[in-house]
Length: 254
Image 1 (cartoon, rainbow, N blue to C red):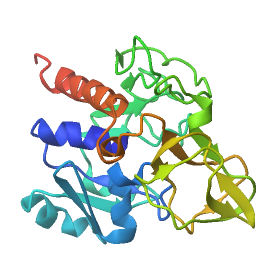
Image 2: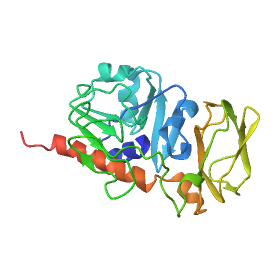
Image 3: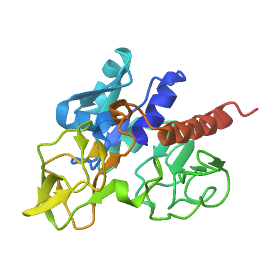
Image 4: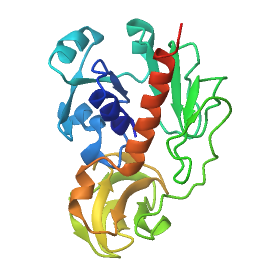
């Protein structure tokens, strides 16, 4: 969702975006996540390129090249040093991990765990359905359902999870076709199996330390490989909500 939001803002003309990350990102849809730049140094999504930086001193250089800087910043140092106009918490942890309403002129939280008007200015609804992408100006969003979104009639079955604690090992790649029951990796010697027929839409990075029942990937039952490499309709809707919130704030009459 962070990458989808960044792309939506970038295409709308907001070019000075800083994408912060943790040292070992846990993205599943890695083919469309700027978090991959943490490992690869560079990542492009739908024609927009992000590059890893080692210091906030590199921001202007990267921005001048029309790219998005990715900064490993688990302690959120950039918020206090860069002093951005807008802070967007797109961690999707289902709880607030430390974002405060005074972090910037405008602070936006995505999904459950935030209360608009209290710890953030606005919350963007992330639950699929009628209100997806809605800008909430007061109060919380819909509670976490714990259910994956439905694709082609499939919800829980399209997601596969870790059978135990350990390091995820796999030689499979995103976009590959899979069959239900087919082994796509292992954790601590235990097989990780595809949950239905389709294509691997997402797969956590091999070598990642995982825990039992952690989401490792998902299968798209539609079988269209191109969907694995483009931003989802959900991420676009949420990004649109963020864009609306930004424009609401900065187009507000004085």
